[in-house]
Each structure stands twice: as C-alpha cells, then as structure tokens.
Length: 255
Ligand SMILES: NC(=O)c1ccc[n+]([C@@H]2O[C@H](COP(=O)([O-])OP(=O)(O)OC[C@H]3O[C@@H](n4cnc5c(N)ncnc54)[C@H](O)[C@@H]3O)[C@@H](O)[C@H]2O)c1
Image (cartoon, rainbow, N blue to C red; front, side):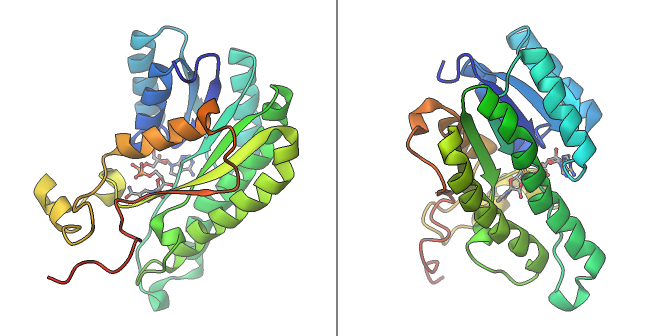
C-alpha cells in the first residue's frame, strides 16, 4: 500500500498506459480520478476499479486543452475525495507526417494536447496539491523528447517541451512541497502504437536490435509512475525518468 491515503488525477486514463497506471495506483491504496475524453471507456474502468475497492475511483470528463474543463475536473476531485496529492499528465496524441506535410493545424493540435494540456494541468492542480500539504506531478515525455525522428516533428517538439515545462515547474513548485518529474517511455504496446495485422512477435521484432529486444508493456511504465507518485521518490524532482529498454542508450546492434 505504497499510495495509501493519496488522491491522484490521471489524464488519458481511459485506456493504455494511463489505465494501467490507475489500476496500479488503486492496488497500492490510492483513490483515483480517471480524466479523459473517452466517456464510455472511462466509466467502464471506474466500474472495474470500484469492484476491486469501492470508493476508489471517479470518472471526470476532461479535454486537457480546455481551461474550463481543468477547473471543473480539479474541483470535482477535491469535492469527491477531499484533496488532491498527485497529478499525472499522461494524455497524449501522435501524428506522424513528413515535415513538408505537417500543416499548422496538425502541429498545433499535437502541441496543444501534449504540451499545453500538461501546462494547464500543472497550473490548475498545483494550488490544490499545495493546499493538501504537497505532492507529486508526473508529466509524460517520450524518447522522442530526447531524440528527433523523421516524421515526428510535431510530436518530438511537444515532448521535448514537456521536459522544459517539468524542470521549470520543479524549480517554482519545490518550495511549495510539490515535486515535478517527467517519465520518458520508450516503445510501449498500446493503441497508440498499434499496427494493423501485426502480431506480438512483430512488435518485438521491430526492436530486436536494441538492448532488451522488445517493446514495453503498459504496466512497466505505470510502475515507474507509481514510484514517482509515492513518497519513495521524496528526493526526486525536475528529473527525467527514462523507461525505454535501452533504446536511447546508444546505436542499435548491426543486423
Ligand atoms: N505507447 C508508446 O509507445 C509511448 C511512448 C512514449 C510516450 N508515450 C506517451 O504516453 C502517454 C500515453 O500514451 P498511450 O500509449 O497510453 O496512448 P493511448 O492512445 O492508448 O491513450 C491516450 C489516452 O489519452 C486520451 N487523450 C488524448 N487526447 C486527449 C485530450 N485532449 N483530453 C483528454 N484525454 C485525451 C485518449 O482518449 C486516450 O485515452 C502519451 O502521452 C504518449 O505520448 C507513449
């Protein structure tokens, strides 16, 4: 029960890494708000978590790009659970396109969701977390926040910027008892990375020449988020936590 007594709001938690994160958090004793645009999947996950531990989960409809939604979401969490200690800015989208085909609308949509959404979350939740006596914020970057990649101009720009947001917020919020860190996942099996017709083995084969030779399961990323949310990471702030199976450790092995 590493999160006993904690209340967490996790964005994009209706599926993927976010869903696995709230499952792990509830198993560790937290009460969680699943904040997402996906209403049906969000409610289904609440039902699953409530069956495991009644009173542990709440769904809040949230578009992370909306200031009004953020105000309402944080207020709803505090009204229901009495406090907020942990914010996980996990919601994200990816659009892959060559630079010349990346129109302004596409670029802005990706940056708006991945970066502006996280900024609004940090700004809106920080006063509530401070009022609760301090806590932890975890922002989702990516290995494309450490390295560029062809076709990833918008996504990589947003994920590099999330690390800047994280470090600057850590400087301002540390004195208020709020730690702010970035998790930097490598390739992880979720809907985001799904390819039509691929088997499990095909996904792993795509990373066969990297140190661990496979993609991550969502649980492997969620476990690091739980660590950052918990008091076990009490001296960690302003840092990048890379969970990438060694993908950014160096060049992959030759064939
Ligand atoms: N899967 C990977 O390989 C990988 C690698 C590195 C980083 N990441 C990052 O991890 C995070 C989670 O990704 P995932 O793989 O679980 O993706 P996913 O597509 O399975 O889940 C993303 C969730 O975010 C929600 N979302 C998207 N836009 C939203 C908005 N405007 N408001 C509210 N919710 C919104 C979606 O509804 C969805 O539930 C993302 O930030 C992603 O960029 C993923």
